[in-house]
Image (cartoon, rainbow, N blue to C red; front, side, top):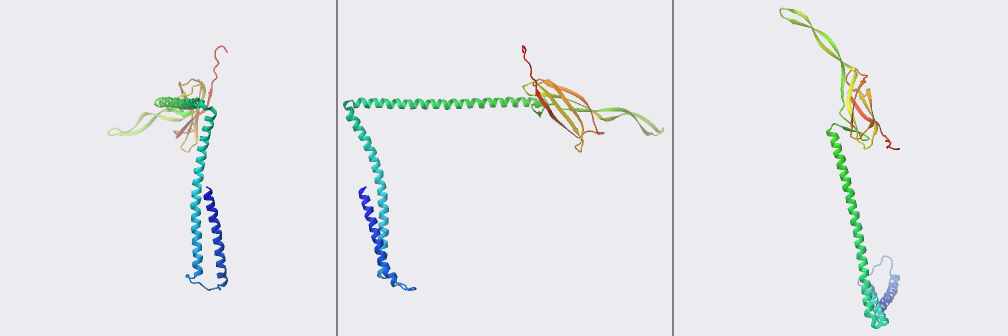
Length: 292
């Protein structure tokens, strides 16, 4: 390493001297030049300057090579120092323990084996913890999937029974409606050959659009007993509300359909165009236990 350092210092001095000589040679030439004058490429002065520049480049390349070699030498020296420290520790232990060095070596081997055993035990413990966490996540995912399937099965059962969701775990069946009728007797003039014209009476009826009867069922899909209120509104073709009914079910138990039939006064002289059904409230009923 000292050799490399001395070589680098010598090359640096050489480069400095070459730069000074180049400047001293170039100054008289620059002083004699006149503006606009040219020198031929083959002048001795330019050849000498070119030679000096080439020498500078060569020295710079050599410096880079020496720097690389110096870095390698420093790395090798660092490794050698570590090996030397291990060897010195070995010699010190042997000198201090003497004939008991073999026992020391055995104790150290046992200590190393125990350390490896502890590391293996800790690794197994971490593995078991990871395995238990994975098993717990699997169980949670399986339970969630089972719950989703049960919920989907319950919804499919409601749908097959004709119930549709209104919100807040309240379902309604298909709602039918009926308009009242009024009997009437109408006349019609008919003609029969040989008899002529005559008046014929025949029964008929008129639809009373002012009253409509609706019928259906309300179902509580929650696990709690609740008081439920459902509103049914009717609209004409322009979106105007022409009738409504509020269905109230008290103490509705889970999964039990509660039927209803109601007569509604309609504000329309023709059939309604559309309807809307929605939940007004679904309050949980607090049931007192016996003995309280």
